Length: 240
Image (cartoon, rainbow, N blue to C red; front, side, top):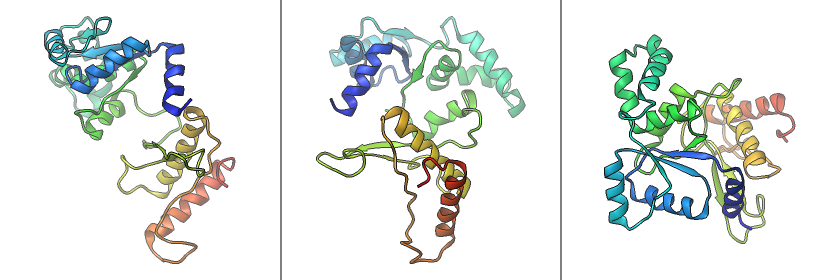
């Protein structure tokens, strides 16, 4: 059983509710049909029901069984607006801005996760990384004790003996353009934790730079060297 099949089997067993804010996007609708057919999760599509139905009909996909929620006309809208206002008023958000933000599909879907209406969110088909992550930073925020946000990509190389049978995790390749040593170290530690919990791996961690055994002298190299020291000190179990 490959990695994707393993994830599907786990998902089928736990039956989580997943919100998909890009409700009329073709790949999202096709994925929804697969999710329903294979009983992978309980999907919620965000958007205008008529537009979603029309888009699904045009594609020839069946989404019967998926819940469709139109943000402004939903039972949650007023509560979400008030919650967002209270969370962000110190940052200059007034009620008008709160209403506007909760009319946005990604912000609304993120609040569904915050309020335990959904267990998770999948977005990014037609939204940038920034537009997907920003609502999460403002509404869900980081796990206690975590100071920065980073990403991790799972890469699978067929017929490869390196990594974990050809599986690698790369982090952070999408969020922080110029991280500090502390942020690099935290990203390395979190990526290792992801490898253990998400991919069932016993990770060996490497931090990359353009210097090999001190072949180059540069502030960027010094930053990575310092990050390695921090990892050794704060997470010795994965530091070597």
